[in-house]
Amino acid sequence: MESELNADVLPALVNEDTSLQRIALGIHGIPELKHDEKMNYLGEFRERIILRLTKRQVAEKLIYPEIKEALNHEKSSKMLINGTLSPQFTDKYIELAREMGKSYTMIHDPELTGETGLVVVSNEAVDIENIDVTSPNVI
Image: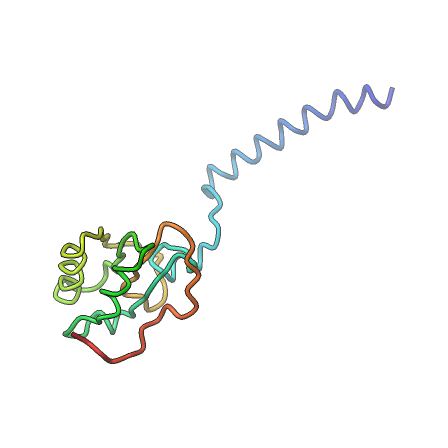
């Protein structure tokens, strides 16, 4: 008798649970892994970043040679640029990406946090320990 009761109730609970899951997805959207981390790195996972410049570094007059090296990295796939930066600061990096045959994307997302101005990324994890450019050398 008890097993018959469980057999009748169980499918109803599973269906209700699925319905609740669908409602939650509709309200909140699909859950995203490491959302806060990604918003700090222009929408990318930290482990995919080859090199990063801050907004202040992108705004400097000359180009960091480390960006050219990062674009030449064997796993480099594209460059992402913070869309809040003025074209007068970003155009030099866009031109560099074009010259090197790499794609670039301007990221315009109001949820972006932090000071990231530009990242060179891979389509897979590269796990580079120090992604920040600290040298003042420019070309």
